[in-house]
Length: 295
Image 1 (cartoon, helix red, strand yellow):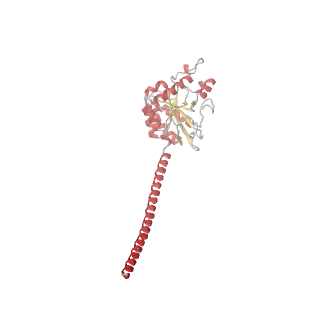
Image 2: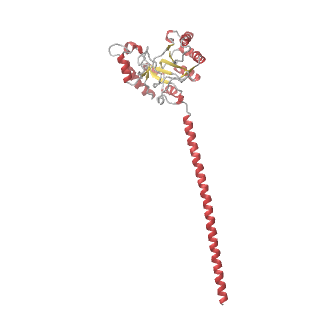
Image 3: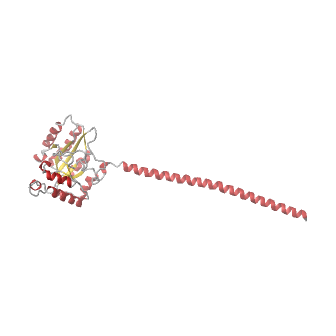
């Protein structure tokens, strides 16, 4: 009887020991497995984080590489533009638009990758539409103002000249129809006609005025006489031979100018010129008043 009891007790101890060993082994296995799973999770998490960072970096790089040419013109460049260092620069400017020839000019300039500046007359706004202005913005063109009437007898008369009034009215109207607010202006027939009071008013109203140093005189030539336009520009450009002075060339939206434009662009390129659009915060001050503060 006693022997049976001892045997049963021994079996119970053995059974408990087996269970204890089994529990220890199970705990060990679960612990190791948990560590492996945790490591994998952290690895996956780190991998996902890396991917997200790479994606973010890719987006940042892609945004950084967006050409200035594609930036909205109403967002004036944060860094004031100026003639490219060590290069001969030509600024092509076109007055008296928008005209029926505007899209033709844009076609040529876009094809040749020549950013340019246009100065519009308020009374001519109906000749273009918002889609055209957006096209200009998207392709790096600058839009400026050229008065509402282009009438010198009103703009520069002694009593109550309309220059500032017209420029202010045109700025507001153009913003209304296009969504673009521009402070860049060109005085019809040049700033030489402005009185000192008008010059000061121009500054006070936040306008930036630009004239030119090469006049194509395209308005003098009849339609179809593109050769005369080209020769006139060529002779004046040749006068700057040996100089790196930037050229601000005055054109008008005329048929003869449109026909001469490809040849003019080629001529300037052959002479080593690069092209830039004149912005309202341009560091180059080209005005007949020789006033660096004529912002």
